[in-house]
Image: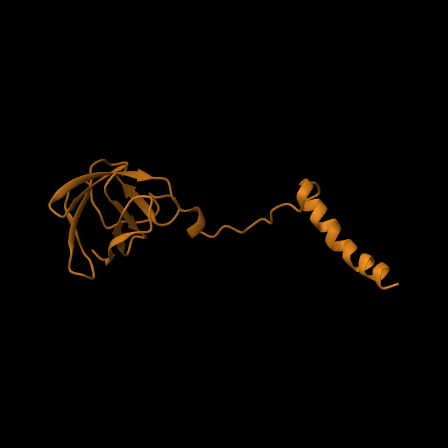
Length: 130
């Protein structure tokens, strides 16, 4: 009697596992309402950076970074960092805006920026403000 109750109680769990393993009849992904922040493109995020004009960012550790856009399409960002000039290329992202080369990455939400290692969670300087 106890075994039949166990089997009866386990049947919904077994059905769920079998469905998950076969991939059939899986519920569709719920539709998520997109907020304005979710659908912004990099050009919609206002960076305090101008084309052909140096813009200074000061980080919380007093590191100074100079930036300027090279082109009107904002695809290339010139960054003067640690005495070196880096030409960073825009990478597709929602938030933050990302520009990077093989040495550094510049991440910004428009108000603050972070300098870090590309494709990594390693941060060199944070809370950089114009």
